[in-house]
Every structure is written in structure tokens, then in C-alpha cells.
Amino acid sequence: MSKSSIPLVTVGIVSAQRIDFCLNGEYLVENKTVSGPQTVELIDGALRWQGQPYRELLFSVGSPSLSDGVKSSIPPQSFTLNDVTIGNGFHWERRQQQTFLGSLRLIVDGEKIQTINELPVEDYLESVITSEMSATSSLELLKAHAVISRSWLLYQKKAPLNASEETEKDLPKDDELIRWYNREDHALFDVCADDHCQRYQGITSLITHQLSLPQDAVRQTRGQVLMYDGELCDTRFYKCCGGRTEEFQYCWEDTPKPYLQSVECHWCNTKDKDILRQVLNDYDQETTDFHDWTVEYTTEELTALVNDKLQADLGTVTDLIPLSRGKSGRIWRLQIVGTKRSVIIGKELEIRRILSPTHLYSSNFEVEKVSPSGDNKGGFILRGHGWGHGVGLCQIGAAVMAHEGMSYRDILLHYYPGAEIKEIY
Image (cartoon, rainbow, N blue to C red):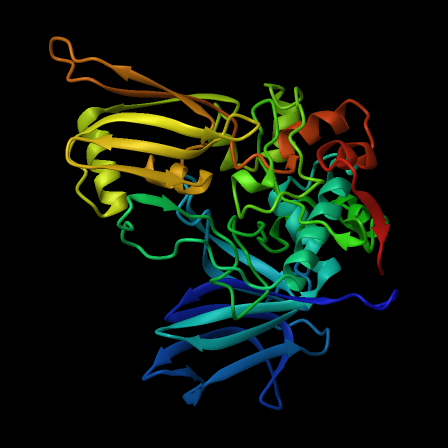
């Protein structure tokens, strides 16, 4: 990579049979200039736009003149998408209208239209750090996140697509389902815009707050990444570790990474609302028990949930037995005992998905069985800690560290021990 060049990134935003959007300035497509509201539909396997069929459409950035009726606070080299789903599959799932910088590519992907945003990495990062964080966060926190978001993205662009160890939907014959999730479903673009990769919700937050701190954070760390032994680091992050971070191999493939060790983190156990607002966007603040949490199921509820998620008949669930834990206490092999059949599931995300209608906050939990008595038919209480996989940077912990005066370098080197901060462009 050239010391002066800024790479481009392609981001998959939304997939639907109809895409309604607005070009907030002049864009170029099919050798003509267009602006304003647009609609593209998938009809008979082709993109239908302005009455004509296409296999692919590229709306590339044109001249900076504003289209009629566009508010001056919205950058002209941007487009606005309606009905963008965020938090897909999580408990905070909802739809938003979002505005993005850069070009927009629409392609046929099976029975839907895939929207792909292409733009320079540094512009992309301004959106990421204000989607993962608040635009009003402290400068050192935003700088720390800019470095890890840049590092993670460039690592993912360089890394080959890796399928999980187990991809079949049905349980294997040996009744052990060990599965983790990488980028095997992102063959058409570099990363997606949701929590599966890293949040990328456009520039709406920047427009709303009209603050320069996010741009300052990206500019002051321009080209900076974390490296270990001359290679880019896979800089994972999450909301709250619950007191200790986890090691990579307990959540993904069995290839330990020296800079993703388990380290103590006492900072994330905070109830300071001003600090939490830096990390938790409006919908995240609906989650209040992220450090220590409790989930309760009756036996009937857990049985129905597990059998539905596994698409198998285990009979009545009689026990949940943690078999293997990582350094943070997160379970990565869990036995579910039923009256007809027992299975072993893992790793941590699969456990979180199977034991919740959406996702458990983490797989770091203890199991308490409740015996039947009177009208109580018995059940299970899960008492857990943390929010997320726990590998790498703890966002709430980092926010507290920045609040206490620690620099972004101090923060990064705590959560990624042995790594170095390098400027690669």
C-alpha cells in the first residue's frame, strides 16, 4: 500500500426488492447526470429504473451543485436511503433513514437488490466511529475507535473469506454443533453496515450534532493501525467485557492471536450516564443491565426455544451444562440435556443465539435450575456478565479510561497487549 494512498471500501447497506433513495446532489449514471428522488425495483430478474432494465447500476459522484429542495446541512456528495434495517436479529432491531457519502452501486443478488456504498476508508471511518460511539464522545475515545475500526477493516479486506467449521443447518450425527461466524456471506462487498461487521449508519449523526470531534479523531490518526510482528491486527471490539476480556480462539477458529489476550478490565462496571451516553446510542440505552444480567425461563419456554432454534426434538430440556469456558468465563461448549436427546453447542455466538429469541448479552453465565413446587413448574435462571463476545476492546471500559484522562494509545495497548501503532499511509 502506498504511503500516500487512501484505500476504498465497499459496504453492503440494505437488500430489498425495491430501493427508494434520494441523490442529494448531481450523480453520474449511464453517461447522464441525475439528482433527487429515485426508485429502483427488481422486475423479472432485472433492475428497473426510469422504465429501463439493468443488471447493475452505478450512481457515481458528480458535480457538487445541490439538487432542488435539498437542505444545505446535507452534503451534496451524498445519497439518502429509506428503510435501512439496523441491529438485524438483535433486540434493538429497527428501521432508519440514513444518509451516506460516496457512490452507490445497485446489483441483482438473487431475488433482491443489493445496495453497495463505495467511498474512501477515511470518510467511512467518520461514520463508523459515530455509529459505534456517539458523535459527542471524548476525543481520545473516538481516536482509539478510529484506529481499531481502520485496522479491523483493512485486516478483513486482506484476509480470505473463511467459512465456519459447521455450516449445515441440521445437527450432525454426533450431536455436537460447533459453529462460528466470519465473512462468508459478504462476497459482493468488503463489509456490511450492521453489527455483524461494524456499525456504519451514514453521516446522520454528524449532520445532527454539527461537531468536528469525529473528523478530528480520524484526521489525527490518519493511516494509523495496530500491527503485531509486521502484520495487521484483527482488532475485534464489543460493548462490555464484564470484568475480563476473552481470547480469540474461544469465539472463532482455533488460532490464538498473541495480541488478543485476556486482560482485566474494571472500568466497564459503571453507571455514569454521561460516560455511557458516549458509547450507547439512543436505542442502546434501552439496555441497562449490560454488566450483570439475569434471564429466566420456565422449562416449557426453554424447551420450545431450543427445539425451535435447533430445528430438532430434544424432548423436554432438563439441564444446561457448561463444558468448556474461555479465560473470561464465557462458555464455548455447552451441553443441552433433553429427555429424548442431548446435544453440545458452541461457540459463544451460537450459544447466545440458541438460548435467546434474539441474542443473550454474552455466553458468560452461570446456570441455576429451579425445581418445580406448587404452581411453579420449574425452569432455569441464567446469571451472566458482559455484553458481546469480549474479544479485544471493551467500548464502555475504553470510554471510562478516556474519561479518566488516559490517551488513545494507553487504551489501545491495554486491550491489545504487544501490538504497535503504525502509520501505513
